[in-house]
Amino acid sequence: MLATLADPILPVFMVMAAGYLLRRIGVMEAEHAGIINRYAFYLAVPALIVSVVATTPFLQIEWRAVAVYSSLQVGLALAGFAVLRLLFRIEMREAVLLGMATSFVNHVFFVLPIAERLVGPDAAMPMAGIVMVDAGFIFPMSVLLVARLSGGRTGQGRLAGLLFRNPFVYASPIGVAIGLMGDAAPAGLMTFMTFAGGSAAPVLLFTLGITLAGSSLLRTGGAVWTVVGLKLLAHPVLVGSGLALVGASAFTGDITLLVAAGPCGAMPFVIATQYGVATERLAKVVLISTLLSILSLAYLTLRFV
Image (cartoon, rainbow, N blue to C red):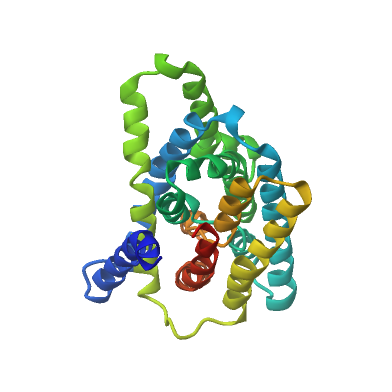
């Protein structure tokens, strides 16, 4: 079991540690995180979305389980946003992204390797629909919302302009088009998308490490622990209950529950960096939830033994 968890966990912390250490010794500066993040925002993450959407096997997915998961994901994000605004008086855009972090999981680069070690390549099937909805709808809509809020503050709030400038708007339709083309799609195009998309996670984790190096890891605050608690406790409990109610198959239910127990994904951090939103809390949420998710994931892996 330890080997199963170590494979995806160690690389995550090693890449974050590299960013942290390089800033601490003066090789990287705080502003470098924003510059590097532009590559992730405009190329790596959109390419990842294209490759995920293009290879999603729509007809083989148990969509009722996806519907339950995605509905609860949005509901928990809204609840988290409300709590953060009412109790902690957090600025609107940061509260949106911290709310998103309560249910947005690092599924592709963290949970999927664990699941594949447990049950083999079939683990990707129940996860594909969740990744598709996240990549094709929830993440792009979150980007547009924060962009809209940021535009309103700077006088550049027209929705048409936001849509035109946002690469996430185009990523999903391009992925669908490539998927429909099947074997007729240029092989080099998908190779490029997979290659560029594969760089998204290391780049995001590296910039996250740079950001963490500029803050005190010992001072977290109630807002951070609230988000982590909602993510690692409320999220899997809600998803497990919802899957039981709709009668999801045992295999799909187990994999989906494993996803819900995973740590916060780095995508809210990407959006924050791109639009000048405070990133310190988001960086700590990703770090702490990744550390603590070892416990929840270790417990759930016993279901597969």
